[in-house]
Image (cartoon, rainbow, N blue to C red; front, side, top):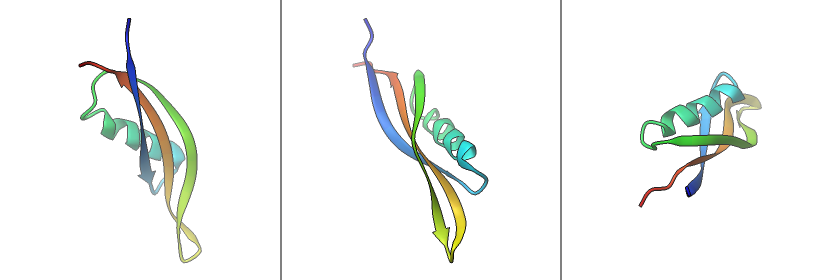
Length: 67
């Protein structure tokens, strides 16, 4: 039997939402082991002076929980 923990993180990118989500997962994978599922829960943009400054992806990540 396995138990998984779920966390929520936000990735950003100047290129697009897919890149923002990828940045979130790749950064998290540097410190979290055994990532299993990534679910994009929200997409938004940071605006500056009426223009898109950054794309943001809110991502839920699950990984195996070990005591």
